[in-house]
Length: 377
Ligand code: COA
Image (cartoon, rainbow, N blue to C red; front, side, top):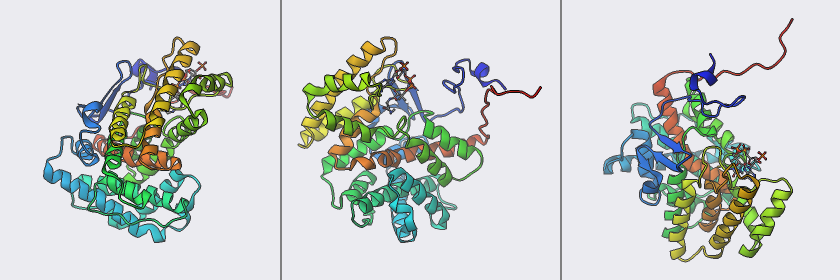
């Protein structure tokens, strides 16, 4: 089967534009800079509804009523608690140098436990428990890395607030928890990106949810996907003050290096999630903590956009989600090596939803390749 012909949009040698699934979960319009998640513009969701509501929207297809929202919050909390119980049996899984690698190992262990399965319960109970577990493991890895002990979840808290508490070791200010909640909602789902495709491929083979989340985490951690926000913060540190942004960016480009947090495969305008995160940061600033970093980020974005436009006049390269992710996650008190695992904490909601949708589709994803090797005479 010639997928390129079938879809009419594939670039030679790539999968760009090839339709691999029908989805009701999210749609990215790269020309207009619009992200629709389950029927809602991202601007109407981030900072307006909580992560639990967003999970409800993705997992049930409708905005959850109060009872469903509570039940989803409970499934997430159960996942956090079950994961915490498992920590003593994780062996070396938590001591990996890289947080995403630790997450993959821990979540794989979680899959070996029967307790997370929820036979007879609502389908999203399983999705909630696995999504919840990701937060506990990410936080536990950060605690160990900082020389401390993992902190038990507080199941009475919302997911974002409890994640922040498990990382920081104390209840975070409400404004910080709200900003993190807005971040988790912003990144929960984003069309057929590389990690979501990975999750769907795994699910399409009839494999389990945990395997799909582990594989997707592996896809997410690459610097061209979810691995960029830590380097964005390194960049801002290296630039130091707004007046130095232009010279620094120009030197990087002259050295042939890419500017992290800029450019996107799909968006030809500014990533709408950058604006949503900037708005959440603005609200956090009113609570008193961000200031200089946000000003530096804005100056750096302006300089990068202008210099990239000079260099690539035909290819708009603007800020992507990772740019303001770096500023926001730093502002709420997360260490930069935890940025990519934190992306997974939010995206696990979308991955789970796609696994559920793929299961319903019930069809093996089996793309084609173009053979360019030799043929025996
Ligand atoms: N900095 C400098 N140049 C960039 C760039 C960036 N961030 N992003 C793209 N370019 C350049 C490429 O070098 C290429 O130039 P060339 O034609 O002279 O070789 C041109 O723009 C087209 O890039 P291309 O590789 O076709 O874009 P892509 O669609 O494959 O890349 C990204 C998309 C996201 C991988 C890319 O923009 C990137 O690497 N960004 C930095 C990493 C990042 O922020 N990742 C998070 C993504 S959400």
